[in-house]
Image (cartoon, rainbow, N blue to C red; front, side):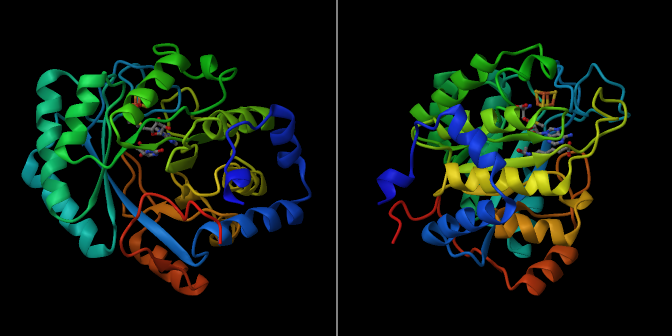
Amino acid sequence: MSAEIIRHDWTADEVAALMRLPFNDLLYRAQGLHRAFFDANEVQLSTLMNIKSGACPEDCAYCPQSARFDTGLKPEPLAELGEVLEQARAARAAGATRFCMGAAWRSPKERDLQQVETLVREVKALGLQTCVTLGMLHPGQADRLKTAGLDYYNHNLDTSPDFYPQIISTRTYQDRLDTLETVRAAGIHVCCGGIIGMGESVADRGELLRTLACMDPHPESVPVNQLVAVEGTPLATAEPTEPLEFVRTIAVARILMPASRVRLSAGREQMSDETQALCFLAGANSVFYGERLLTTSNAGVEHDRRLFDRLGLKAEASGGPAGRQQAP
Ligand code: SAM
Ligand code: DTB
Ligand code: SF4
């Protein structure tokens, strides 16, 4: 059964048809798959830390950390081990199972990588799953991160291949696909998703999801970010995403990648509790948890605890890589 459900050959027409389904039919289908592969009342908690802030040479139009935009962000060098471990311990104590360290680099330099290897080793030793997002990687670098104990590498496609050039000019879509291949070949779990609300069409959202779903295997972790519009970035005045359109995107992600963790990522602070509840109903089963994302604030821990309580959601205890690969 699951071989037919976990597909890597979705066509653009099939995905477009899913995106257009009546809302109730779409959620019913997504929820059925969610329940077949996961405990529908369980959510995985990942906590982010920005280990190297700002002064990035890339020009990603959404990003407050690009050196090209004046967002008032103070650049910071790579964080010290002690500070990272302090935040990782706090994340563990708050209930997170994964600690994700982000660096505003185009790609890591040799000295950077050595330091990140140490961070990965030490965070892993705390019993947390490890994730880093450092920009583009070469094969040797991915192998070293794997040896250090890295569980996940986050590298997003961000949007569809067609819309991509309107958002980033300093690296190509193919560069991103190459890094994802490199990560996969090193035996590291892939965390890959995108951003909704950058002015892309519904078809672009579908093509982003289809590109992810045509990867074999699927990314184990799929972060769906809602744009956090930051003053000073070219996307500061982007139209806010229509909440039900965001929920639809989550539902289609769940249908296309039924055994992957779909993460309701950036933008939760700007969402109502009801929108978040619909996202969980549509198949989201992971969040970024903690007071901060990278440079912006996140829905707070106390708020999240109350929300999870109201919804009867429980935090995942162990943090396995993905859902059941066999639907029961
Ligand atoms: N520099 C590395 C890179 O780009 O690969 C890693 C860090 S980068 C900040 C990680 C991801 O965060 C981006 O690919 C993007 O999807 C997401 N992101 C960044 N700024 C965002 C924003 N303002 N709103 C939503 N998502 C954002
Ligand atoms: C992802 O998909 N979203 C995270 C994480 N991976 C690295 C980052 C969100 C950043 C939001 C804007 C900020 O705080 O700077
Ligand atoms: Fe740099 Fe990453 Fe931000 Fe792009 S998303 S500007 S690569 S930190």
